[in-house]
Every structure is written in structure tokens, then in C-alpha cells.
Image 1 (cartoon, rainbow, N blue to C red):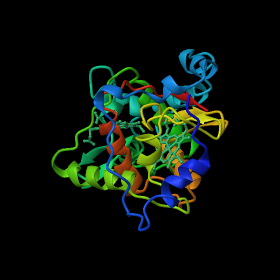
Image 2 (image 1 turned 135 degrees about the horizontal axis):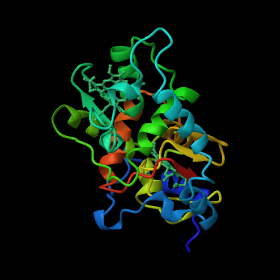
Image 3 (image 1 turned 180 degrees about the vertical axis):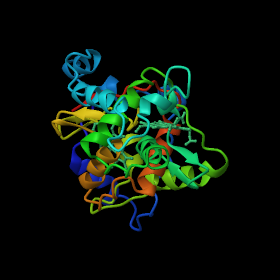
Length: 264
Ligand code: HEC
Ligand code: HEC
């Protein structure tokens, strides 16, 4: 395997043209070569994801299943009493997020949708992004779509968000002046700091990362990638990261949902 050092990656930015363009080359990922991050993992990490009893994510998923069927303390319906087998089932729902929400006139991801239900249907305050409760509920709902093909709408009111997310993906940034696309479109399969660079899909998230020793959201993973190129990470739940999430889901072109994934 070719070994690309970080120095060589930095070189992509600094050793190129004299007047570096703001945007990286608009390289695309050919649909026929789309591969899940899972296929780049060591066999031991794959085995953790494959076996629900070894997958540490289940500490969160089981807790999420409990929260889902628990009625709010002040009264009202539990998630489970509205989302039963026959009525508003959530199997497959996570595969369609992020999605444009007419009522709030915004793009919402699964975390955002769950918080809308808390506010609109349970008279509860939204849960903080990356709190154990929100991660657990999101993980549980996402697990109901395991194996479903990622399939988001980028039409109509979702289109401007798709464009926003796509632009971010090709935007050079940070002290290393690198774009997402330079690692995940142009250098996937190469080694970087002990990792094999994957194509940067979001289909395993929320996921348990060994480095975090915890279950975490896709936005947490994006913050790590931005920090890795010494760019200022965006806020959890920000509109722009949610737009990037939409772009990634569209780019994943039908990969199966893997959440709860396990990653290094
Ligand atoms: C009182 C009934 C009610 C409760 C309680 C409720 N929901 Fe919902 N939920 C809905 C309705 C109705 C929708 C459809 C969108 C809308 O009209 O708000 C929905 C939509 C959703 C969706 C999107 C489904 C899709 O196919 O796009 C998710 C995910 C979801 N709810 C999760 C939850 C979770 C998790 C909880 C508990 C924290 C919860 N809901 C509590 C009624 C409820
Ligand atoms: C310097 C190279 C580099 C840049 C630039 C970069 N990443 Fe990453 N990214 C990595 C590495 C290394 C990993 C961990 C191994 C892998 O690719 O799954 C990773 C992981 C990911 C993952 C998780 C994939 C999985 O299956 O677990 C996603 C999603 C992702 N990156 C998206 C992005 C986005 C979006 C950007 C731009 C905001 C970005 N990355 C910028 C190197 C980079």
C-alpha cells in the first residue's frame, strides 16, 4: 500500500500552485467505488461492530430503548406510545435524515427531529447535543434502520442545504489549508497517523469510537476532522454541519446504514 505521510498531505496545500485556489479540485467519488468506512477497518474492529454483545454502543442503545418507552415525569405520551408498530413506525426513518422540515422551515437531522418531538409532542425541553440521553435516543432510533439504504432527498427546499454542504466539503481550510475532498475523495485507502483514510461516509454514526471510549455523533467526528487540519470546529448541531451531513448522505449513494458502528 502507498504510504502518504501527513507531510505529503500538507504538501498538497503548500507545494502546489503559487496562488492556491480557495476551493480544492472538484474531484468526485465514482458511484461504483463507494465503500463503507467499515471495509477499511482492522478485522478486530470489524468484529466488535459485527457482534452486538461485544459492540460497546449497546450500553447507549439499551439505555435509548428504555428512554423511548418511558413517559415524561410530568405526564404525557412516551415516544413509544406514538411510535408503535402500526402507527408512525420508525423502522427505516433514520435512513432518510437529514430532511427538510416544513414546520420549522429548516434542515433537521435525526437528533434535531427527536428534539422537535420532545418540544412539540411531549412539552419537554430539547436535549443538549452530545448528551448521553440524546445520543442514546438517536442511537436507538438509528439502530431501527440498520441495513436500510441511506436515501435522503436533496430536492426542493433541501437543495440549497445540499449545495452548502457540498461547498464545505471542497473548501480548503485550517492551518493545513486542506479540504475534506483532498483526504476522502483523493487519498482514501492511504495511511495517515495509523489510520487508513476512508471515503468519509456518515452511515455508521452515531458510532462508538475507541479513541473516544464513548458513543458519539457524526458532528463529533466532523469536529475531529476539522481539528485535525487545525480549522476551528463548528458547533454541535450547527446548520452547516447538518448540511454537510446531508451532502455526505447523498454522496454515500445507497450504502447500508451501519449505526451503531464501531470505529477506531
Ligand atoms: C404525541 C405523539 C408523539 C410523541 C410522544 C413522539 N412523537 Fe415522534 N413523531 C410524531 C409525529 C406526529 C411525527 C410526524 C412529524 C410531525 O408531525 O411532527 C413524528 C416524527 C418522528 C420522527 C421522524 C419520522 C419520519 O419518518 O420522518 C422521529 C425519528 C421521531 N418522531 C422520534 C420520536 C422520539 C425519539 C420521541 C420521544 C423522544 C418521539 N418521537 C415522541 C409524534 C410523536
Ligand atoms: C487530513 C485528512 C482529512 C481531512 C482533511 C478530513 N478528514 Fe475525515 N477522516 C480522516 C481520517 C484519518 C479519518 C479516520 C479514518 C477514516 O477515514 O474513517 C476520518 C474519518 C472521517 C469520517 C468517518 C468515516 C467512518 O466511516 O467512520 C467522516 C464522516 C469524515 N472523516 C468526514 C470528513 C469531512 C466532512 C471533512 C471536512 C470537514 C473531513 N473528514 C476532513 C482524515 C481527514
